[in-house]
Length: 560
Image (cartoon, rainbow, N blue to C red; front, side, top):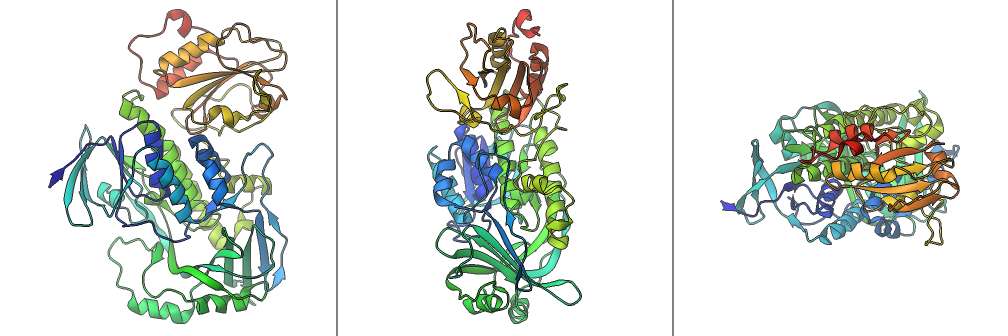
């Protein structure tokens, strides 16, 4: 058995989740290998919905422009019941949210992420499968086999399983994966149609039986290209019977989730459903791909153990309602990568990696529960206000207020608190740039950012000292920016200064006086300090970073 180079992190699975994890590690100069058992990217439009929060993540990573060039907008949904059009759903979000909803075939998402990762000198090792692994106090030893049958032993400091619903990493770690399966089978197809329905709208056409139950449904999500949609619908009885006869008996512990082998639906199968349910007479053509898929709902008991962690479908699977799955997995990877990077560098607080499970497991549980509820009872079963429901579907309300590594709630209640997503705003100005900047322009490509806000009646006095605390206690990983209200003085600070010319930052963040906001690398507030307080900032940084060998001076640590 060959022994090869030792990466800091071995990522198993090169779907959107694994690629996000690997790209974020490489962006931080962490040595990483990523392997996938498939010989090539699958040409399937599986997960196609891109949530606004995911676009915010890709903005901060620096690859959102490529996505915007390739995706199509999702403006809303047209619903038909027994051929009668129902009220249109428009996907509206608050004006400060920088991105809307989008649709993109999964293979295009993977292409963009793979090209981004390649820019850091890392390529997917395709046709390579994880056979087994064992961990100890210092690292993980993994056995890999490539397409030629050659085995390799890899020693890494951490192992991350992004290898889907049938995850070898999850099984090897012995994690529980409790849940259930839906009995129905569904068809997926990537086709073109010639109807005159509005561009950018999904279509949901249903038939309601005499007893009030919905017994037939067609769901169409727009894709790039004229009249192109990814359609899903129930499998017809004759195709289901054929597949049942061909399907082997499931093995013990096998998860019935995702695309299945066996006879694929034909264009005729798709056309039959369109003839029954399409809101306009139309003919399907140019089918690029079709398959049958099953749906389960399961959640791991924890997101990892020791130096081995799981993300995405390896940790949670559920109905595709609301396009939550891939986007939730990308957020898993985004949450984990910055923490792993600090751990590899030896500057993470002792329990920092434990916060991955503490923060993401409740999110996974909420998403699984909500999507199952929506799949069985309909979105209308959700009692939330429609505006709140829309933001939740956009994944803008995911938060970590109960996390062990975020600060205590501030005594100034308006605006986002520690653990909340850091919202965007515009109207920031400098003395050089002659155009308004967005807050996300300041955060893009950075790690932790300390935002120091000075109100009209004050100045930036003491901000340099706070920045020194942050820089020292974070081993140089925190950058600081000053945001000043209209009449506040910059004083003699040497920090970058931006003017909140329109007062949008103050309104969005709910502050009318000087305050400090520490934005984490994943775009959440680690701490909100009103007023800025050196002792509280010091306490928060100790939750994230290892103590420095030489403590800052008593004067700096005690600044309040």
